[in-house]
Image 1: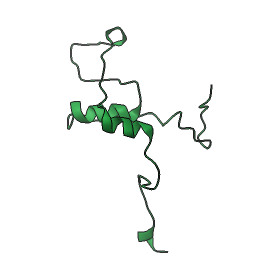
Image 2 (image 1 turned 120 degrees about the vertical axis):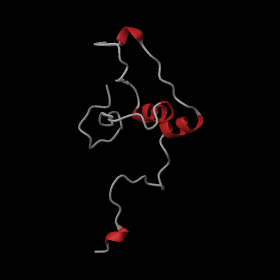
Image 3 (image 1 turned 90 degrees about the vertical axis):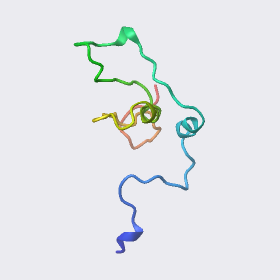
Image 4 (image 1 turned 90 degrees about the horizontal axis):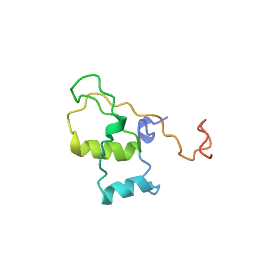
Length: 92
């Protein structure tokens, strides 16, 4: 078996149409909106951020606002993908 013909790792299938979220981010830069009543403060430092939203939008925004300033990012699995093999109910 020739390993050079196989793709390993995270690979974007160039034959597929890009998802709508990718196209949206090419034409519009997402912004982060601070919601004061949702803040959890234990001290006066602003070292941590919790972002609720689409992973791609959040990462695109952070690429502009926090480039080379982030140590760790935790991203939840891709829920609501429409994938029937993924064990999560997308339809309510």
